[in-house]
Image (cartoon, rainbow, N blue to C red; front, side, top):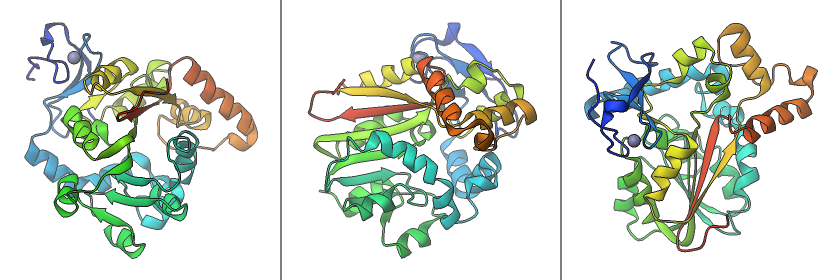
Length: 310
Ligand SMILES: [Zn+2]
C-alpha cells in the first residue's frame, strides 16, 4: 500500500502520520486507508480516487451506494419520499439558518438533491437556485420549477453576473478533493455581507469517539470522502480564507439510532424508542453530546465583508 508523502490539506511531511483505519467503505480492492495528520488534525484518504474513478463512481454507483448506506428510510428510491424523509433534517437546520436568512434573500444550494431545503424557502419568498450533479431528481426539480444547474461551472457560464446572499451546502464539502478552492469560488459568488453556511460530518462522532462500535468503524470511513474534519482541522481550513467565520456543533442522530448501532451493529433506528423514552430524553442526550464536543455534525458560517457575530 502506497504511503502518502505529505498531508494533502496542510502540506506537512507525513512521517508522523498514523493510519486511522484500513476499513474504507466502498473500496472494492482494499487498497486504501485513512491517515491522520497531527499538524492540522485532518483525517484523509490515500490514495484518493483518480478523476476517472471519481467520475465513474458518481455517474453510476452513487445512488446505489447512498441507498445501501441510508437504507429505505433515506428515501433515495423516489423524490417525494426523499423530501419526506429529510423533513426532520430541514427543521433541525432551520433553527440555526433562520437568523442568517433575511427577508427576500437570494439563495444558492450546492448539492440540492431533491430540493427539500429549498422548496419551503421558495414558499417564504426567497429566490432559490440549485446545483445538483447527480441528475437523480432532475425531472422532479424541473417539474417543481426550481432552477437547477448540474455544476457551478455550468451555472457561471449561464448566469455570469449573478450573486447570492446565502450559499448553502450540506454534506458536500467532505466529498470535494480541493475544499479551499471550492469555498473560494463560492465567496466570489456572494454579495457583500453574504454568507456561506455548510454542514459536514464531525470526526468526533460519538459512535466512534465514545462507543467505538466495530461495525460503525467499517461503515463510517467512506471512499466517497477524501476528508474527515474535526473542529481543529475545519478551523485550519477556514483560517486560510481570511474571512470572519464561526463553527457550530450539532447532533443529527438520536439515542434510538445509537442504541440500534450498539445492539444490531447497523444504521437506522432513528426515532425507534423515542415514544418510550420521551422526546425530552432524546433532546437532553443530543445536548449532552454537543456540550462534550463529541457530536456528529459541524456547521460553518462564513461571512463576506462583515464582522463575524461571534
Ligand atoms: Zn495536515
